[in-house]
Length: 294
Ligand SMILES: [Zn+2]
Image 1 (tube, rainbow, N blue to C red):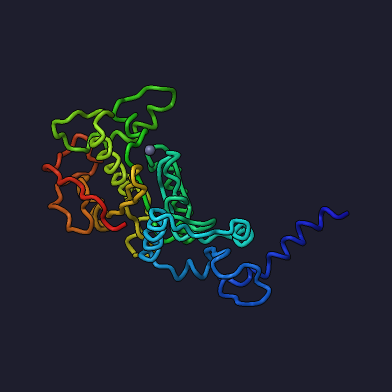
Image 2 (image 1 turned 90 degrees about the horizontal axis):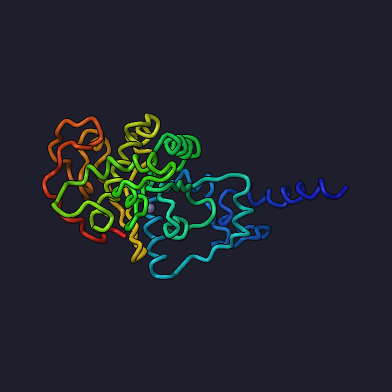
């Protein structure tokens, strides 16, 4: 019988490639994928990639996306090169919005990152479990929680849309809605600035949830083995702005802050355990300056 032997043959034909960790550095004549062709993440690459380098890779990828200078990926080669294992360098938690596809926005290939996509980039138990696997077990170095402009899920939460199961989902965005200080302007989906501020706040809540509700991830973060950053994707420009709401450790103890706090020391912390909700509104926040890092 021929059929049973075919998978075996295919597997054997892939083995030499997989055995040589970074395929590109093999340099052997048998390597069918020249440098930059398969170009996939390997265990060796993952281990030696720092969280800061992981962030840099994403910044560079978004820069390529913005300039149209995309990397040329050979997906067929990448399928083969990644078949036996994955060593992603980051996890992107972002919205289901069809225009916010992380692999495109960051110009990535197969096996580069985990992506978790759910309306409003909410971080719930299932997302936390996925992140714990990605970082504690699979070794990824960076968590990015990425919101985006004109987010439909945020608009739904802001307008209290009622439809089927949506209210349960939108309830996960409500704390961010309530945490955005009242500036006297309409707090509905017609106010685009408000919608975007809620979306940015939702990113902060996502990061905070990760740190508050996952001991595993908090320990990885505090020990410096991983980093957690926020990001905001601008649908109009394609640009991703990265930000760090607060330094590790402080975000747990400080009321939700308007952006961008970056690495500035936290404002004197008022006691706040629960997620902001009706809690203390900050003073008038400075409008978020555009384009901070790329
Ligand atoms: Zn969205």
